[in-house]
Length: 186
Image 1 (spheres, rainbow, N blue to C red):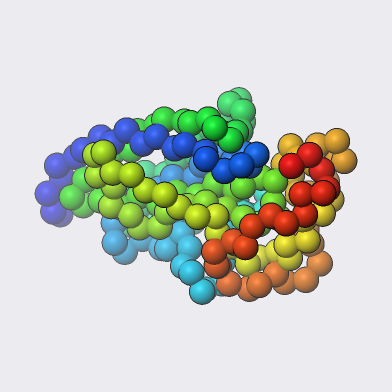
Image 2: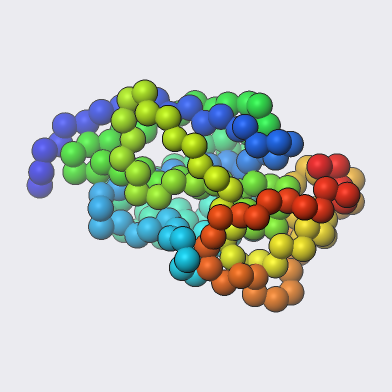
């Protein structure tokens, strides 16, 4: 195998979204042959749809943990820690190496139907700054109805988080934003 020189990186995630908290972050450290977490213009995997619609990470963890091209899989901000709210930050470390230089991560924007933030196959470096947009997983219709949204903006209206009827856009794209701010407490 190649050079095993390792480097521990401290990663700080800042939530600069307006009144939009994020679910726990799924994180994978891997090589170039690991599966894509997402690809713009392509259908979402079941694992991506799960994190984008509910914040769940089980399917992504299973998919990445079973792949020999993945060195590390973890979830930051577990259930015992609150959501990453607007204006807050969270810090964690990842260890990358010459054999496993890439990081992928994702988290749900929880006041939406299926919006997520993430990076895919990115080689992180010390002092690097990355700004990412919200992405639409394309797995669910963006109806912005609180019956279909798990986030705190809809807490007073119940937290059913039903699956919307219809297929959504069908492919991952940059999210068009939240327009139904009249409903819930966004």
